[in-house]
Amino acid sequence: MIEITSRDNPLLKNIRRLAQDPSAYRKQGKVWLEGDHLCRAARDKGVKPLQVVLTQGLWQSAPNEWSNVCEQVFVVSDALFASLSSLESPAQMGFVLDCLEEPQVLPNMPTVVLDRVQDAGNVGAILRCASAFGFKQVLAMKGTAALWSAKVLRAGMGAHFGMNLLEGGTRDWLSHLDMPLITTSSHQGPFLHQCVADKALPSVCAWVMGHEGQGVSAEIMALAQLQVRIAQPGGEESLNVASAAAICLYASACSNLVIDL
Image (cartoon, rainbow, N blue to C red; front, side, top):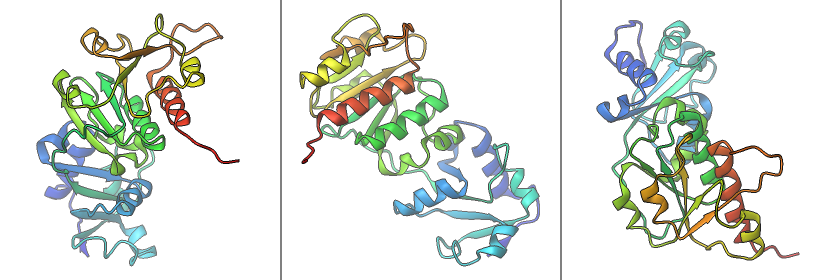
C-alpha cells in the first residue's frame, strides 16, 4: 500500500482528467472507474486494474478485500478522493484500467448500432439494455458519446465489461455484419408487436438506434432490411431513444425465447 497526501501527485492529476474530460481516456489510454459497483463488476468479469485507489476510511475498514486485486494500491484521504470525483456524493474507491485493445467487428454477434446518440445517459442505458437482452456487441458511429467516459460508465452500471464495444465507426463497419439491420421509424413500417406476433423478427440481427433529434441517418436507413414502428396509443410523437431501445431489444429477445411449461 502506498499513501498519497499531495493533491498534485501525477497519478491523481491524471485521474482528475479522466473523471472530468469525457475524451481523456483516448489520449491517456486509461479508464477511471469510480465506485464499488463498477469496480466489482469489472473484477467479476476478470478485468485486472493497473491501480486501485482507496480512501483511508475504506482501507481501514476492509484492508484485505482490495489489497490483492493488483500490485499498486494507493490510499488517500477522504477529502483528497473527493477532489477526484465527478459525483455529487463521492465514492470511496476507484480503479485505473488500461484501455482494452481495439476490438474487431464480430460479424455474427447480435449487435446494437448507435448512430450519433449524443447523450451519455442514453448511451449508458442502451448498453445496459443490450447486455441484459443478449446483444453483446455495440458499434458506436462517429458522433456518438464516448463509450468509456465517466457518465456513460455510470449509466451502464457495469455492462461494459461483458461486451464487444467499438467506437468511431463509419458506414463501412456495417458491411462486416452478417445479419439484417433493423431501424425504428415513427411513420413507416410494420408495428413491432405485430412483427413479434408474426415471428417476423430475425433471430440474429443488428438494431440501429439513432440521434435523439434527427433519428437514424438516411445512409444507414437505406441499408436496413426492416423498419418498424412502436405503437404509442397515448399519442406521443416519439420516444426517448433509450426507452425505444429497451422495447425493441426486449421484443427481439422474447421472440427468440422458448419456454417449457
